[in-house]
Length: 290
Image (tube, rainbow, N blue to C red; front, side):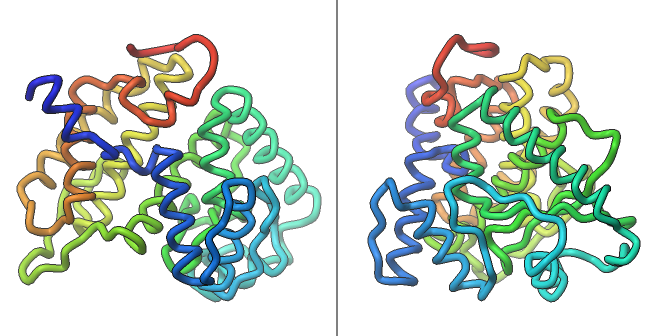
């Protein structure tokens, strides 16, 4: 593929890491649900209120992501099957809760210092981070509860690790927003299939595999920005395998998603931070890539 062709193909292809495209979709959903066209200054609050209306959830509508451990957010996350009940409230005391909250808050500060535009994307798409332990899984997010990201605390996680998890969940939530607005899957007869997950390293339904490809791009980008060049090779290989399989099923994806797959496949072969839209908003010297 020539350089010019690649540029045409990847126009808005990294939409899940594109502040302009993301704000456009957030404003579109707000207009559709609440008949309000938000200004840029009020977009975060108006979009959060839109998600609260859709999910009937007590979401935070302030400008920055809220970090909680318990309360109404935990209750609704359990009710919607986002958070499991493997750890009861009575066994998770105030001290570890406060410590976990501080760790996540510190990680958000770290992300904001390292990459302010990426932090801004997270603040728009994640209204609340719920910190709660589990003996089964490592957290997650859900299309049924947009705005909330669940992180499982661990003493082994650094601020860099936690910030990466936040970016990971932000991408999932952004993809759900894209599917609700522009659409990602055609649902054509016979289009259901399984593909290799770039993140989990096993076969999953195609829509989960697509999510994994986008998350992998974001994680590789994040690590390159922090100069962690030695920590991307395995993920690049997994991303290449995942996107190679997805490319065999054009009928399953809309043009919007298809461009993302093409771009992710190219990125797996030659990752460049300059290809990622949010990087254009990053002030200061480029730390990695071209």
